[in-house]
Amino acid sequence: MAQAVVPAMQCQVGAKAAVRARPAAGAGGRVWGVRRTGRGTSGFKVMAISTASTGVVPRLEQMLNLDTKPYTDKIIAEYIWVGGSGIDLRSKSRTIEKPVEDPSELPKWNYDGSSTGQAPGEDSEVILYPQAIFKDPFRGGNNILVMCDTYTPAGEPIPTNKRHRAAQIFSDPRVVEQVPWFGIEQEYTLLQRDVNWPLGWPVGGYPGPQGPYYCAVGAEKSFGRDISDAHYKACLYAGINISGTNGEVMPGQWEYQVGPSVGIEAGDHIWISRYLLERITEQAGVVLTLDPKPIPGDWNGAGCHTNYSTKSMREDGGFELIKKAILNLSLRHDLHISAYGEGNERRLTGLHETASIDTFSWGVANRGCSIRVGRDTEAKGKGYLEDRRPASNMDPYIVTGLLAETTILWEPTLEAEALAAKKLALKV
Ligand code: ADP
Ligand code: MN
Ligand code: MN
Ligand code: MN
Image (cartoon, rainbow, N blue to C red):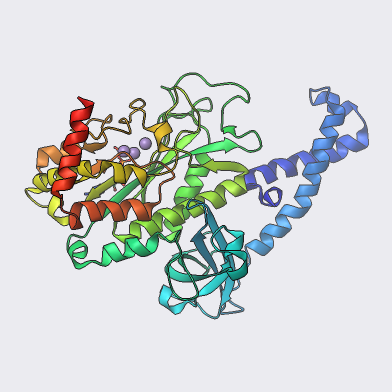
């Protein structure tokens, strides 16, 4: 499948090569000689594949780009949900009679949960509840992407449905009143297919040490920009609140930011943005990984810094509330760490702009802390905090929900304070 939808650039290269190949094949080997190599036979092989692809790709694209609107009101809805590992995304398509504006207009649907590790074989049905809709940048028109969460037929959220609990937290009147904002920095790493080695890295070897790659331009420093850019536009088209992108410190690694988004929307937008990234990398034949430390050693890991503020933090005198939130976060450090992504212990080493996983710390403008407060926030006495602990593979429903719970709903207990004091004493 990936072959049939190679990026247009490659198709054009193939088409030109094929035009050249025809006379070459007819005229014998001499023309090949002119084209500077002695790789006659292997040259033919490549041409044969290119010719085949020029026959297939344009016709498929014609169908894929068909505008169905003049002929039918029907649209295609891609129902998307989080699978059994808690990080894999699954989706399937269905026809809806006419364009919709709100998820409540969409039917519930079901799937075979025994094939996603979410239900036993003998009772395998899982029910999809449509929760948020986005425009579909792949199909265009009125077609949509639908973020769903997952329930048993009896209407109970299944264990991997983390949206349900988050939605409860975000509909608590005390949380609603605080209008929680989240700005999430999603880092990710691109890998070459089959070898599972970062994009732009020599297979079986390493690039030069980190330094020149962050926000870099140039063929020897920036790898995968078209993917980052295609994703940026796809997000804007879909209606995702994407706020920027940048090349990362480790070559082949990128970041995009989504937000500030209010409440449950932050989780929905991050999940759909990840879905778009999976689809775009699928088309490009490049593998996406959200592993928090894809390459061990002196290479930056991948995080999902979560910038957070409440209404009170954004108002005059907000710094006091930011400090109060930080106190609460310090008392629940272990709980947060346990919910911030698989394999995060490989990333939170205390090196490479991280804080150690066992110790809670905070500071102004310090990227080696668990929580960073920006200079601007300190200067203005109001603003937001950055939780730098979440890993790139965190579940945004869990992280945003927990931040709101710990800082708005939870009050430190004597027990929590005593425990924290004891831990601190042990470390000294
Ligand atoms: P960094 O300097 O850590 O790389 P970025 O610029 O990548 O930061 O990301 C910062 C994020 O914080 C952006 O998504 C931005 O929208 C978000 N943000 C800005 N102000 C607030 C706020 N008051 N509350 C929550 N998030 C915010
Ligand atoms: Mn950033
Ligand atoms: Mn970053
Ligand atoms: Mn950051």
